[in-house]
Length: 148
Image (cartoon, rainbow, N blue to C red):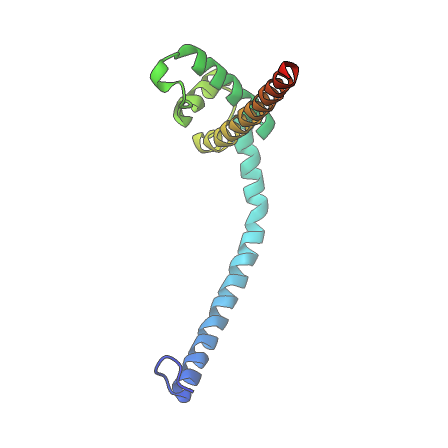
């Protein structure tokens, strides 16, 4: 029973070491969990204080603000070379921040919802293009039947 070049006696010794080390780690984790539970109420009161610093919008509210920022930014810069690329997360974040100064949002959160918004928009455009293509194919078929 050689495992990775070890004799069975060596493997047993290794197991004994890991058991004793694991027990101490488990006790430390339990103590940390107890300390964490005790600190939970303090953290809750701290987060309540942080909430007073600014309004944290729901994902739906923030998504609407991101969509408005995208419309504003796309109407501002009608440059042909950037027409296929969406605005950067940083520029959308700044736009949302300036239009809603009382909101407490991070650039990371805006970036995350921006990606979802862009993906949803792209999917909707792809569906629309598919419908348009199907309608065009149907129109061609109708024209071909009318010609016959």
